[in-house]
Length: 320
Length: 211
Ligand code: HEM
Image (cartoon, rainbow over all chains, first blue to last red):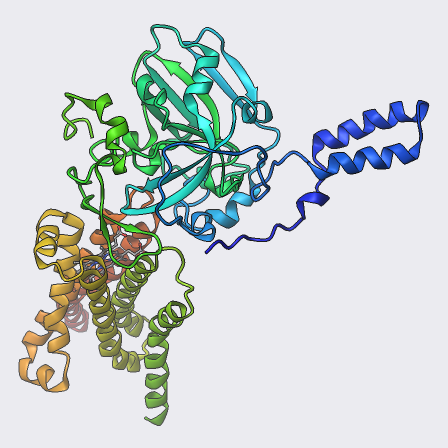
């Protein structure tokens, strides 16, 4: 069942910042040209399709993507009320309320490092860089629970090809916003803020790696990593960095937040693997949110056919 | 006497509120996305809280001189055992689905489970010997036996500390509370030991001045 929370303000009532500015510009011109009648008309037309900027607003032009699982999708209210987002709180039920303080506009993502075309992207231009696809992925948390989530985004490789990594670039690092004014959780040093995550370049180029802007056809709610995050369905959830402000291409393996916190528990790869236990609990089974009995965890979270070749010959017990 | 009985009833009912709340929320489907995790955490929290309350009674009684407080110690101790049993049952039933093999592996392999299990097992003899008859029968040995709660509570706090992923704030608060509660006893014991010597010295001094 899909339960949607009702937005405080109806999307049709929202005046986005750019619309507001456009209107002023237009008013100036309109005074010399036509009259007040036209103003109302144009404003109405624009207001019918404001830019979707807030969690819960419909994302336009989303097409059905590939790699979709047809398993039962986890209810919206669970995906948006049960979040590991330590920048807000270490309790999974709190980010839903606390993340309201996150401002997702204006927002820029700096893409830099070993690339031919470093660039700082405005979030709205990043949204339009490629066709948005709906991808229904399994999501497995390292804590032993899982969900099925209809994400909206496009393959991260589309952005990679825009910035053209140098031959020397072998890794990608993602960095989450670190702003104590908006994120109460970073005032306490549970992790070494800012949160960073990383991938090998071939992993980052894998078509499954999704640069993600939405879920259930709508803009990402803040607690799910708005305005932009990465989703890597064959890895434990913490690898999928949220609220990204920087993407850096490097020749060395980047340090990652959880690996720094507990290197013997969280490796750089952190591929979902039922045969390699977390030192403190088994990873053989998982509890799918909404189900009573646990189910067996699948190798690479069920994406073995797609990703196993990237790790051929690697000892996955060593590179956990 | 009647007042104490009523107060006991009130405390008894209050101690059941956490369970009632869980039951009500479960019935209303209000336990959130992962109800079993909530039940595990809530019963674990209340076990530790009741252990701390139990350990708090003696210091509070001595510091305030309100000696009737001792009448509540058995009840809070038994509630600690009660919530620990629920906590353990949740683990056996809802986490491992009675898979004994898997449980034994867990207890042997995962140190947070090993200490949690230790904490729980140590509470069993305490619950069994909590009756008036047992207290009488065991005499002095009863007190010795019931000092196991120090180890059990310590193991409980270590269990919590070891199971959190990164945020050790809450286990830290419990550790602080436990340090105060056990530290008080240590100090009190030392004073007691010192007391006879002090008294003797005092009387010697008095005798000297009197002479
Ligand atoms: C006196 C004994 C025990 C005490 C005081 C205790 C206390 C706790 C506490 C405070 C928590 C964390 C609650 C939270 O996060 O809010 C917890 C979690 C847990 N306990 Fe215990 N516990 C005890 C015995 C046991 C035993 C015997 C087992 C199993 C054999 C066990 C298994 C667990 C598990 C599986 C969790 C959840 C871990 C997680 O979510 O990662 N505990 N316990």
